[in-house]
Amino acid sequence: MPKLQEGENVFDIVIPLRDARRVPRKKRAKVAIRIVREWVSRHFHLTGGVKIGGLLNEYIWSRSIEKPPRKVKVTVKINVEEGEAVEALVDLHSGEKKD
Image (tube, rainbow, N blue to C red; front, side, top):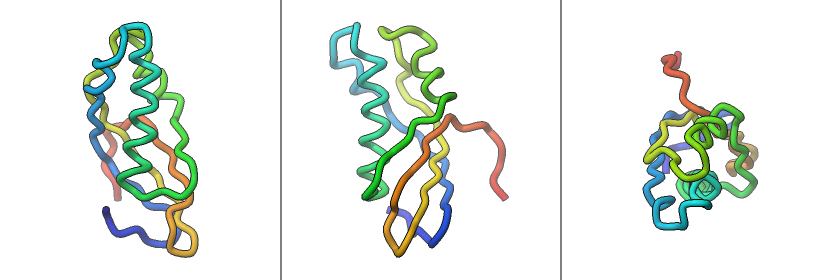
């Protein structure tokens, strides 16, 4: 787990979605969204919820419910209060470099 400081922390990560291929074809995109939430929650030890951004949601659903992407590069913004990661916003990586 990366070191989290008070305030907002930003990370660019790649999340594998290959496990979505193990479910029936008509449930794959829905399961891919759930995999993103669980992956971020597990790797950043969140006590609160994980919000999925609109661009990420559209990207996963862009090729219909049957064919979600195999992996996705995302930007995770985590709010930290009193030393605990409270909530996270996950959105599609824009390609811009951080300062």
